[in-house]
Amino acid sequence: MKESKLTILTRGLIKENPVLVLVLGTCPVLATSTSVPNGFGMGIAATVVLICSNIVISALKKVIPDTVRIPCYIVVIASFVTVVQMLVKAYVPALNESLGIFLPLIVVNCIILGRAEMFANKNSIIDSAFDGIGMGLGFTIALVLMATIREVVGAGTWCGFEIPVFSTHTVSVLTMAPGGFFVFGLLIAILVKCTNGRAPKRKSFDCEGCPSAAACGKLGSTQESDSKKEEEEGVQ
Image 1 (spheres, rainbow, N blue to C red):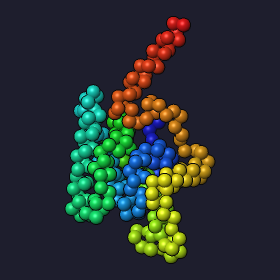
Image 2: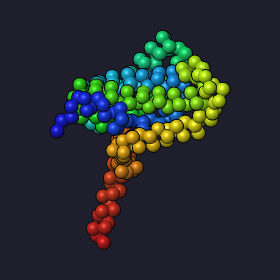
Image 3: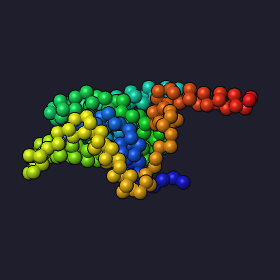
């Protein structure tokens, strides 16, 4: 049964949030969520790339040869990342300096490559666009939530503005890497509690459960090893 546009759009917000449920794109999330402007800027940049790449890949899915689809996806994603980076440099240079290397590293963000492989490659242009919007908003929301907690409690500010009480009682560890992991785990725990565990859980952490398995080429080797084990068991 085909999913409705609303289901596709809202799936990435909570039920399949790419950060808090699927646990993808953790590196840029932890690195850029030290302040709300950085987190919001990173989320919007990734969302734009995700929507545009999903649309183009869905439009070209019948043209791109299956054997070279991953390199083609990377070329498409890299093109949009370059455009976004140039726009950020031109109009928001402060954000470009704050995000640093993590802005061009959107090219290898597993959320974007994963959605290209798992959704855009198999669905229509409209559905792929809605999927990109939903997943991008989910990514942005998770970043802003983490950044809000880390900036308010850790630095006593929000978007650079001082907050009474918090500004004089800061917990500076939240602005560091350990604080990022703590807030990340806290938000995941809150989501699980609020949804009563109804959010999908990853049953396996091997290559077959990874949306980027096809990109690294390990899925095939894993399947081959499994088939060999089955053959050996059959012989015994």
